[in-house]
Amino acid sequence: MREILDLINEMSPFLLLGFLIAGLMHAFIPNRVYTKYLSGNSFRSVLNAALFGIPLPLCSCGVIPTAMSLRREGASKGAVVSFMIATPQTGVDSIFATYSLMGLPFAVVRPIAALVTALLGGTFVNTFDDTAAAAQPLDIPHDSSEQKNLTFFQRIQEALKFGFIEMMEDIGKWLVIGLIVAGLITVFVPNEFFAVFKDNTLLSMLLVLCISIPMYVCATGSIPIAVVLMMKGLTPGSALVLLMAGPACNAASMLVIGKVLGRKSLIYYLISIVLGAIAFGVAIDQLLPREWFTSSLLSTHACCHEATSWWHWASTALLALLLLNVLRLRLQHKHTCSCGHDHGHACSCDHDHVAPSAAQRAEYTVKGMSCNHCRANVEKAVRSIPGVTHVSVDLPSGKMTVEGDHLSYETLQETVESIGFSLEK
Image 1 (cartoon, one colour):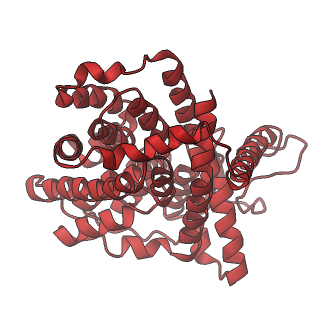
Image 2 (tube, rainbow, N blue to C red; image 1 turned 45 degrees about the horizontal axis):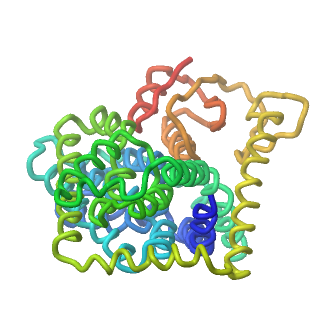
C-alpha cells in the first residue's frame, strides 16, 4: 500500500490549502452574495450559478440542500440545475488536489468542463421546461454567521473552524473511502486492465458512466480512484468522465431533483452531464496530447521510489490529526447533550440554547442529512416559518428541536421536504 501513502503525501499540502481557502470564503463572503444574482429565468442567472458553484467547497450531499434553499429564495430552476452540476464537480480543495496528483492540464480542464456542462444543463431547463420560472422568494433570515457582527480575528477563527473541523466532518469520510477504494483497485485489479478498451475509448467511457452515475463520491475522493485507474490503463478522457459524473450524479441528487424540480429538469440534468462528460472525454483522448495528462502520473509513480520531503510528511501528519480530531468529536458527541437531552455531561453542540419558555416545544427526526451543510439548511428553512422562535438540529442523530407558537407538523414537513429531506414525528 506504499502507492496509497505516496498519493496522500502528494495531496495533503494542497488539501490543507484548499480547506483553508474554503474556510476564508465561508467566513468573509455572505450567502446573500450568491442568492442575489441567481433569480430570473435568464442565461445570466445560469452563468452566475455556475461561476459561484465552481469554487464552492460543497460535497455531493451538501450541494442538495444548498441548491434547494437557493430555489426557495427565488433562484430559477435553470440556475439551481446549473449550480447542482457545477458545484459538486469542483471546489477549491479538489482543484488543488487535482493539480497535486493529476497535473495542471487536469486541474484546468476539470473546472472548464464543470462550467460548460452546468451552462448546458441550466440553459436546457430554462429553454425547454415550461415550469422553470423563478420561485417566489421567501423571507428567510440570514444565517448565524451573517447575523453576528464579527471582528476580523473572529472571522479568521470561524474560517479555521469551518475549514478544518466542519469540512473535515463532511469530506473526510469520503476522502478516506476514496483512498481505500484506490488501494483495493491497486491490489485486485490487474495492470493494463483497461487495455481491452484501447481501440474503443467510447466503450470505456460508457462503462465508467455506468459505475459513476449511481455511485456516491465527492470531488476530492474521486481523485485517487481516477489516478489509480489511469495507472491500470484507463484513458485520460475516461478518467475525466469519472471525475465529472461521479460527484455530479448520484442517486440522492437525482431523487431530490425529480421530486423538487420535476422530471423534465431531472432529464435535462442527466443529459447535460452525460453529454458533457463524454464530449470532454473524447476531446481529451482524440484532440490533445496524452502526455499532457499522464506526465504527472509518471512523476507521482517515480516519487514512490524517492524520499518524500519533510513538508509532505508534516502535511500528512497534520491531515491525519485533523481527521482524528473529527473522529474524537463524533465519539464525544455520543456521550454529550444533543440539544435538549441531558445525559449527565456538558453539551458540545454549536447551537445557541435558549431557556425553556411557555412556547410550544416539539421534537422531530429529519431523514437524509449527511453533512453540516444539510443541518444548517434545515435550521435555516425551519427558522423562516412564522411563529418559530428557536430551532436546533443534531446531525448524528437527526433530531430536530423546534420551539414556537402554533407549530404545525404539516407546515414543518412541507418546509423540510422542500429542501430535499423528510420529517418524521
